[in-house]
Image (cartoon, rainbow, N blue to C red; front, side, top):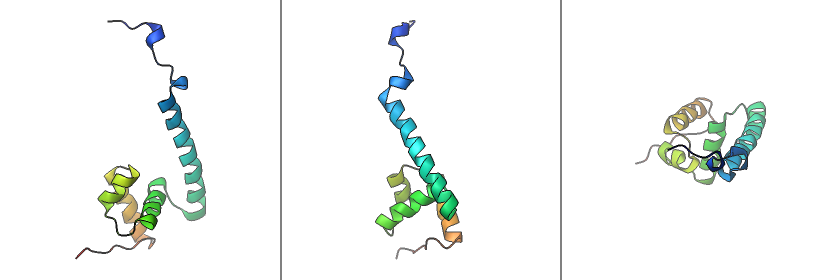
Length: 92
């Protein structure tokens, strides 16, 4: 079945697409500031922000709250631990 040209979505007018672009622009601007000022990547500053609000979370819980891939969170946590920006506690 061939779709009519009028039935096609024009991305520049599609709200979810526009919100996604806006989010990326804002996140990128914030990331530039944190990268220059503190040497942090986007996943790193998001991990720090979540842990500041919810101390003691596991990496999996951080991934769930930030909606960042678990592998990216794991890498960010590894770098933050290496740089002494966060500490790891082992649950008893």
